[in-house]
Length: 451
Figure 1 (cartoon, rainbow, N blue to C red):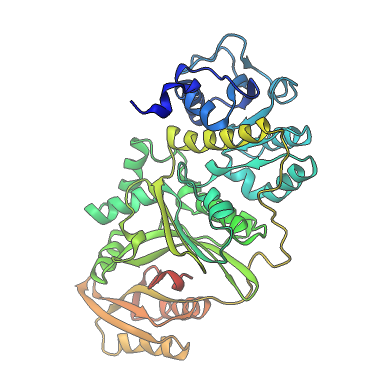
Figure 2 (figure 1 turned 90 degrees about the vertical axis):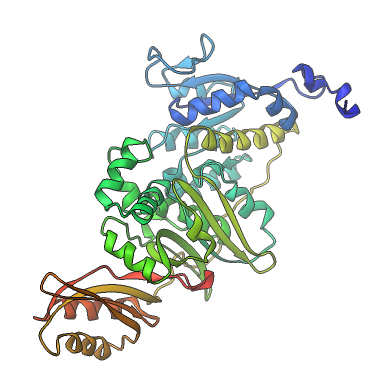
């Protein structure tokens, strides 16, 4: 037997040193809240050992205290009013897993104003009001933690805020939405069209009945806004992050990408250029040898480059009850540990660097697109001539054969300003000999080449 464990007071599940306990109030008992209760109950000794103090749930706010639940707190813990939890002087630490902007935002702010540390999994709230809430935490000498807001169980916030804090981060590229990654993975592996892949994701519980926030890129925009704010120290509002979704991606795009040695992924990117920060969400063709190309199904991954550490990648389950609850409980442990040491807090993150959150001006990238051109002589030449007039240079173009009364051509550009290409394609779409112009999708050649 390991002699270090013989007299370990934690083995008996009792605490023999330090403060007796830290009490937690939980706002919300949905999927994530239930997972948090399960972990605190099932791994209570492990949590106490890591925190250095016993962590106990003192109250749980829910909408309906009589609703049947998978996990039922002890009698008297359920409260129908969040204020009964937040304002309770017997609650040391508040955990917000309600979701949405309000009333969650008001209760998080109230808890911080009371000097209580807050743990949240709410990406919408952090992405839209993160700076305000961090400022409130600083003023009231407490702390806001939000590891679970990005990447589920992947510890990316802690990595950027602590472990990589000595680096100048050059760029972040992530697959941050499991729903869209599952859909694109199914389209890639089995040639399924987007509507069928989406319906399958919904049937498996990977997509909501209203998947708009996922497929439009809104969810990923919130997450990359948070990562950019943490990495670069400047508040990047999610509403200002340009985004493109995947609803227009077809099986033909996926097949063309395969012929080019690529896969299509929905990426979220953030980087600092010339003293400004640029973040965006977009579908892209990734070369098969890029590490992110191998991330399939509902998994997430974040690729980070730093001037000291070089290239790193964080990979794991980006959603789900227990992975997300794992991140929440990790933040609870960190906060409880600080409370046990006297509650003297220093701000982990300050998003106040004096720089624009979005770089103005054009962005350049190589692009792929398809067009269906009639068989009449000079039809393709007319389209290529428009590209030349708009200073869009081609790297390659190939025919995918005849059909639908014309020939389908696959074109790949040299790096070009996005707006210049859009202008050219708008003109080409109006040519009599051009029957259809497909999606223009960025091509990512290397981690530094992200749009």
